[in-house]
Length: 553
Image (tube, rainbow, N blue to C red):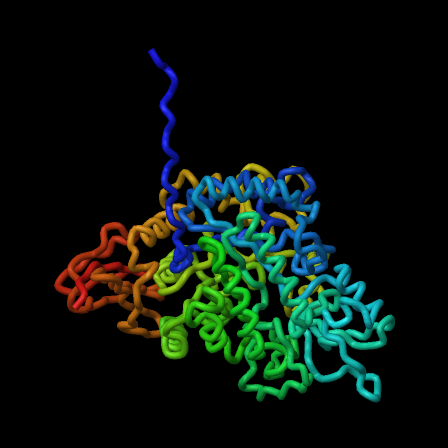
């Protein structure tokens, strides 16, 4: 009798969903502060692997990992000195490969953070560029002669304070840096620079990543004539990109960023991504005057980046129903064919629980609102725990931005403190050593351990809301129509292929009465809020939401 197992035909390959990013929820990991695995007080790739089940259990679609490339870490990885390797602080390329494999096993896509607008000043390209003005890399950065009086070429300012030009005594020219002087800007007008950066993109795609978050995407090109930026009237100044103490806000940044030449490069970038089964991209647009226009321009059609996010809801502007309606209306008017990626918090801004002074019920209402909008969503690590901005004493500050403008602006360290995994440990289970930033003691009571077993916790709410969003395709793919917007209230309809959901949000500490539109037939029992309809009316408690199932007219 033949006991040899029959040869099994290979399972048919499932075609990759090239549209998976549309409506996806991406969880941002700031690796220095997520989990330390080797006892040096700094989070690393192995630590992320250990904590991936927490992210998968949350119910998101993928992760975005802030930079882990080789770097002197003056801007904590956003000053890259080798695009094709992992900084030893975070591990090795083998560790990244293991992370990628484990994430995919758990059903999570992996996006990595690419910084293409600038490098570190210790990058070999820049070292060669400054020392050899006629060599291969001579024109890879933005160099310019001084004015006759020795002053910088124009009035461009750095986001981190002061002039965006730094004198280099070796080359006897100024070089451009939109951020730290140790972060010289690449010259993407040079085709060789573009080719090299696209080869970096190809390197990581070949390694298996699912896409990229593109840092400062609207800073890639500068005006080749080096024209000076015009001044802004005081009433037009906006501190959503730089703190109010920074005169960067006093200029209209027409010439140091937002240049039209960027569109051709983004098309080259997208053409490369389209050669892979389901690669995607999300760009960060940093502009206070025309952010929505740029986001729409960069994402419209199918030949540029897939989605962009701006600072509309990352600023200190009060998150009223009216404000939400205005932003959504602007986006629909300017870019109806484009795609947004919404966020309330990230590694560069004060956590929104503190920025908007939200108590626990308010945090949940805004989380439900964020996860109901048309577009994709980025959640920042700790958001699911309801973490507030941590206080970091001056002597513990690491961020050069905060050190520069202390005490009126305390920098970004308060949103970057370590994640509390357990309560019964002064370092919150993040590390056995002293963390690179202090663990916020008030965060220990919000640890993952404490909240995991509590069905009424913030973490449990996020899990329920994410599961609800995933159960209704209308949230990922549907259209949006504002029904009513007031300072303390917002309602809209989401519609997709015969399914309609009416969403109403009480954004106040008082109860309110909502008249449901025609066509709403019942509350959606899958939603994490339980308000009911009586005589076409819903009574909402303070900071409560309602989701009603309806028919499409």
